[in-house]
Length: 203
Image 1 (cartoon, helix red, strand yellow):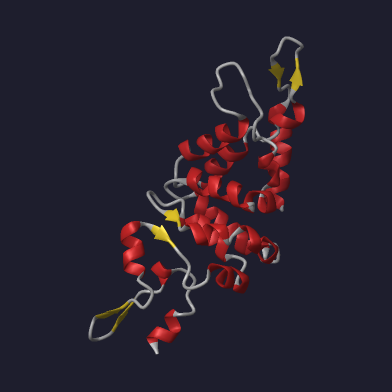
Image 2 (cartoon, helix red, strand yellow):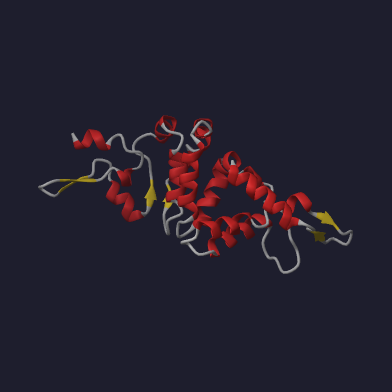
């Protein structure tokens, strides 16, 4: 039946269908209500859903990059315990979800969810080294927030530019040096950033 097919879906907003030709809406898990409230919630127990498919946590944070959407607390809490399952997912499947996240209207929200749930450490650990690295000068943000915002300000239709925005200063932590007066230098960070970005993209 349609209801049995929908029960295999991962998130409630994906478990809504229309029975043709009658046009009757089938919504056994209140997906329409979650869409209206912009809530990302698994069908049933989130721990079970994520244990079935390690890509689902990445899909959850990708959906969180849609304006106004947020992951339900129990669904969010189930992501970190599922990281060993996500670690087994084929890299090209992770790449596809990450691409969709980066091309979304609000990539910063998705990236922050990746950071808070441990997905960032699993998939893009190089970025985490940028957290808390103060740049000084005209920079108001640490390196990681700077990269998030640079990514979001790049044109949404260009994956190349959004990746460039996300990785353009990723080498700064590796080359940061103190000048002895409480300031820091980042000599050759552009070369190190290019080297790191290439390695990440090859991976």
